[in-house]
Image 1 (cartoon, rainbow, N blue to C red):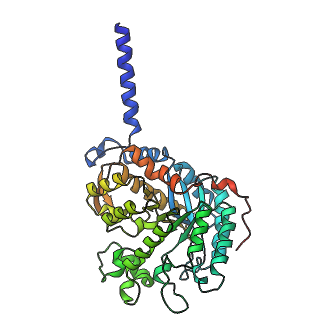
Image 2: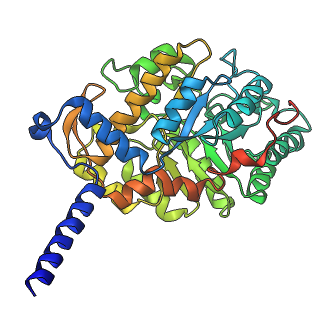
Image 3: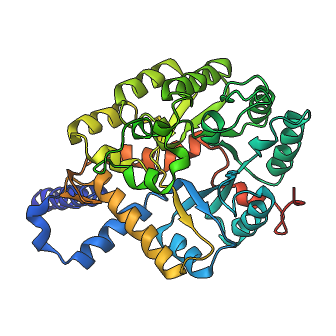
Length: 387
């Protein structure tokens, strides 16, 4: 009998130890001295890798580098490489060049990258705009692209022949949305910008450096440009008109300062989700308990993303360090209860439950982007004919 009791006791210890080690670290600054920073970083990296994480918002503006792909492999990180057309950027002006590089990245990543394609909105005033866009998108779909991106130039820059701003719900875009839905692809919609783009200059603002360097998107100096509400209202009409189309709002749907309003959109539009790309810093300056409660409530509607880039002229080791640092910083915020500084802002980590972390970093991406883990196997290594 004693032998049986001893066996049950040992099994209980083993089971409890297993449960403890399955959970992310729930630590604070007080326990920082119990392990070296190197050991702690390795432990957190291992915990993240165990989830087979997916970064649903990246831009790999090169054919890639073996060292970069090795980093993805080490982290078990899968990425969505997003294309867009930006007439203010020499590289992104030409979608053909972007596609050529992207179709080289996908097979070279050995299963770590999938493609989100796009179309050129500046062809909008051509009579065959919709038909031409659909033709090119279908070619990309046939080659393995799993999503389509519309960018902020729709709503904030693009104009029709009469000089009126074009919004996301313009009827001439509707056939494109219907085609995306027909092919069971996902639309990524970067619509509008943070509130700061429409506000007076604030050197202490989170986005002040961006608008200082990119004045084209600083709407405060353009009183005739659409207001943010107009742009988001148009996006909402798109959601309502296409209830079977999956739409992921980039950058927290540009509602990073209005989590209550974002929650209302989730309640109203079951086809709508958002990514966290380049907006985690907007969360860390809010009360941690408020953000945690929001994420727990809408845990099926938020996907992890960063907006990290691989630039053609950047040293690959610098790129790798930037990516690794971003992933480590975000994981510390979402997975632990540490008190720490995130990009100069004091915050406390959210300590999300493991089940929620699995959704944020993996399961939600699989749901909202069907094929994101298998698309690389559906195309030939040479890629499609160039647009």
